[in-house]
Amino acid sequence: MSLLGASSLHLGEFLPPLLACALYRRRIRTLARRGTPVSRARRLAFISGALLTTLVQLPPVDGLADSVLIAHMLQHIVIGDIASLLLVLGLTGPVLAPLLRIRLTRPLRRLASPLLALSLWAFDLYVWHLPLLYQWAIRHDLAHALEHACLLWFGALLWLALLGPLPKSHWFTNWARLGYVVAIRFAGAVLANILIWARTVFYPVYRASDAARGLNPLSDENLAGAIMLVEQGLLTVGLLAWLFLRAARMDEDRQAVLELAAAHDLRLDERRATLAANAGTTAELRARLLNNGRDPNE
Image (cartoon, rainbow, N blue to C red; front, side, top):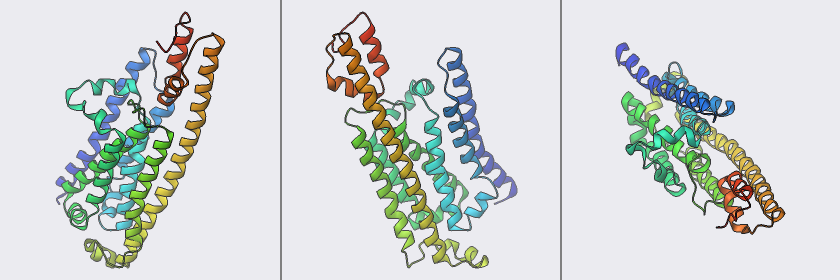
C-alpha cells in the first residue's frame, strides 16, 4: 500500500472514535445543564475505550499485528473485549436517548437482547478466526478495518445486553446473567484451546514474517491462544465479582423497600419489590410509596 493509502486508512480508523468522543462530550454537557450529569467514572471509561480503540489500530501496533499472530490477538482482545466494555460502561439511558430516537437505530434494543447479542458475538468471533477470512483481513487493509469494526460492534452489543442501560427482560435475573457470563467464556475458551493445542498452522500468512523474526509459526499460534485464555479468565473473575456485588446490592434494595412499605402500612408484593431491585428502579418505587401513601401495586 502507498504511504498516502496507508495514511488515509489510519485516518479512517482514527476519525470514528474521535467523532464518538465529540458527540459523547456534547451530550454529557447537555445533560449536565439539565441537572442529570454523567459521573466522572463513566466519562473516563468511555474516553478510555475510544482511546484504546484508536491506539491499537495505529502504527507501530497495527504493523506488528500484521506480521505476528500474538500481536494480532492482543489487538483483537483490546478492541473486542476491553475497549467495547469500557465504551458500554460509559453509557447511561439519557446518553443513549437521542440515538434511540433515530429510526435506523431503533433495532438496537432487540440486537442488545441477551440471547441475540450473545449469538451474534459468538458467530462474529468464530467467523473472523476462520483461516480464510482471517488471512483475507491480514492481506487487505479494508477487510482488516471491517474485521475490527465487527469485533467492536458485536462486543459492544454483548456488554450492552449484560451491563448496559437498556431495559432488561424480567427473566434476565442474576442467575441468568451468570449463565450469560459462563456462555461467553465457554465460547471464547473453545477457540483459545483450539489455538493452544493446535498441531497445524492455521494461518500460514504469518510464516514468512515469523521466520524473519526467528519465531516458530506454531508456537506463535499456541501462545496467541494462551494469551486469549488468560485474558478471558481475568475478565470472567471481574464479571463474577460484579455479579456478586450486584446481587448483594439488589437484596439490600429489595429489603429496604419492603421495610418502607411495612412502615407505612402499605401492601407491597414481594415479587414487585424483587423486579424493581432487578431493574434498578427501587428509587422510583420508594417515591411512589412516599407519594401520599399510594399503593405501589395499583
